Image 1 (cartoon, one colour):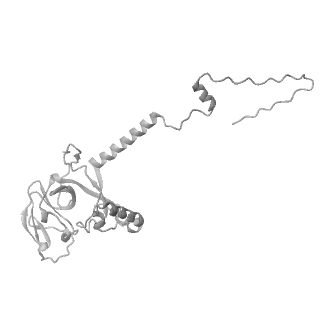
Image 2 (cartoon, helix red, strand yellow):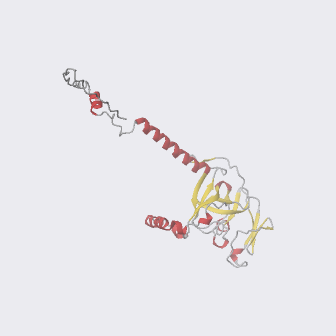
Image 3 (cartoon, helix red, strand yellow):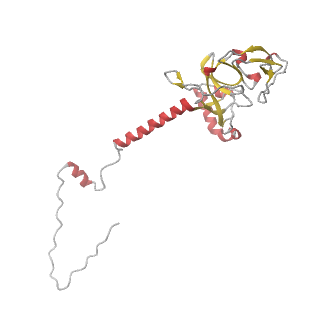
Amino acid sequence: MVQLEICEGPSPTAEPQPVQSAPEALPPENGDAALEYANPIGPNRSKPEPGVLRRVTRHLLLLALLVLGVRIFIGEASVVPTGSMEKTILVGDHLFMNKLLYGPEIPLLHWRLPMLKTIHRGDIVVFRYPRNPEEAFLKRVAAVGGDRIEIRDGVLYVNSRAVKEPYAVHRMPPRSAMEQMASLEVPRGQLFVMGDNRDNSSDSRDWGFVPVKNVMGEPLFVYWSYDAPSSRWLDDNPLHRISFYASIAENFFSRTRWNRMGRVL
């Protein structure tokens, strides 16, 4: 705060004193002093100090490594583009997948950590498609290695016992050819998987068994669900993708399935 000094006037009997001029300011002796003299507020601080840049860069790198580590070893977000698991999982459901217990793979080295969880019948798993490992599929395990499986009139039999499947959807007549499958034994280290939407699923009935080592994880819960047809999710055309994302922004509130968010699978 600026302080005001009050100066008293001279006494009438006092002799007038000669006015002394203020001493002239001495010029600075060097260039640095000249800058400080010309700018009494302080040096120019518009540019960040090198130490600040190093700290920010280090924090960003640590954050990137943390996100990458979570994605590789713990969990990953994914979207379901097809209806083979309806009504359990809908087209447009965005899932968080648990990978930690299923032996996540170390990038570049292609090493896998030990699998800590045993896969059981009825589990929903994410796995690499045996015919094209670049693709990831989501199905339910119907039988594991050593089981004998059969389908008669739409009823699943494992080891000669009928399995109750309240999640299964059948649209074809029970005696149709699609609701039949001859008895076969699942080899050790393999899985027999099927989609819950039995009449609209490409699964082990078509292309055979899934090696246990192909399993990547399991879906935990739905964190977001958006109502759009499979054709929109599967279309890789860049212009169509931009149009789709624009439509999501426009219809986010009206087409989001709010009742599915947070649903545990």
